[in-house]
Length: 341
Image (cartoon, rainbow, N blue to C red; front, side, top):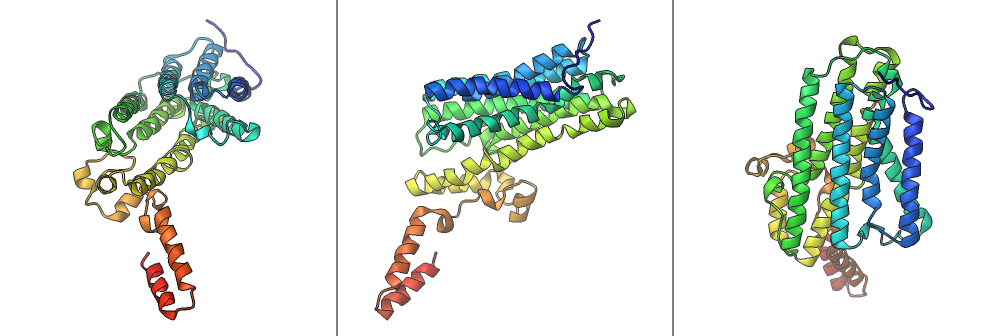
C-alpha cells in the first residue's frame, strides 16, 4: 500500500497554493503577451483538475470518498473549462477584458482573483486528501450524507451543464428581442449558477462525511468543516461579484434603453425566480418580502427605469436645467418634471 506524501504542510495548503499561483501566472503570461482571451477561463477550470489529481496521488492509496470527491470536482472543472473554451472560440473574444487587456496590473488583478477562487473552492477536496485527515480512521463511504451529496451533485451537474447549452443555443438562434424562458430557464433566470452552487456544496457534504460520528477529532475535524469557506466563497462570488450583479440590472437596463422587448422581459422578471428554481405560475403572486428573503431577489438586482435608466437621468437633468431659467413658470414646470421621476 502506497504511503501518503507529506509536502510543506500536512493539509496540502501551501503546495496547492504554489501550484495554483504558478499555473495561473503561466497562462497570464501567454494571455498578456499575445493579447489572447481564449485560455483565460480554460486556465481556471483545468486548475481544479490539476489540484485534485496531485492531492489524490499524494494521498497514497485513496479511499472511496476521496476518489468520489476528487472525481466530482475534476468532472465539474473539465466540463466548465471545456464549455467556456468552446464558447470563446465561437465568439472570438472576451468583452470583460476590453478595458484591461493592454494594462499589466489591471489584467493581472483578474488572474490573482482567479488564483484565490481556484484555491479556495478546492479546499474541501484538498483537505480531504491531506495527510492530517488520512492518519485517522475514516467513516466508510456510503453514509446518508454521502448519498445525499452524490444525488445533489448529479442534480447540480445536469442543471448547470444543460442550462449552459440551452442559453448558448438560444443566443445562436434568436435575436436580442427574444427571451430565453424555456427549459431550466422557465423556472429560474440563472439555473446554471444555481447548479454550480449545488455542486460545490455537494462536494463539501461528501468531504465532511469523513468526520462524522467522531471518527476524526480535534483540529482535523475543525479543518474539514472549515472548508465550507469554499462553497460559500463561490456563492458570494456568483451573487455579489461576477454573476448576478453583472447580468441582472445591467441586462434589464440594456433591454429597456434599446427597446428589446422590455415589456415582455419585465413580465419574465416578475414571474421567474432569480436563482432558486420555482414554478412561475406561483412565483408571480408571491409577496415581495418572500421574493427578497427566501428567493434572494435582493434590491441590488432590481432595475427601476426611473432610477437606473440613462434616459431618465437625462430627462431629469434637462428638467433641472430648464427650471434654473429666469421665468418662474419654467422653474415650476421643471420642478414638477423632476418630481415625476
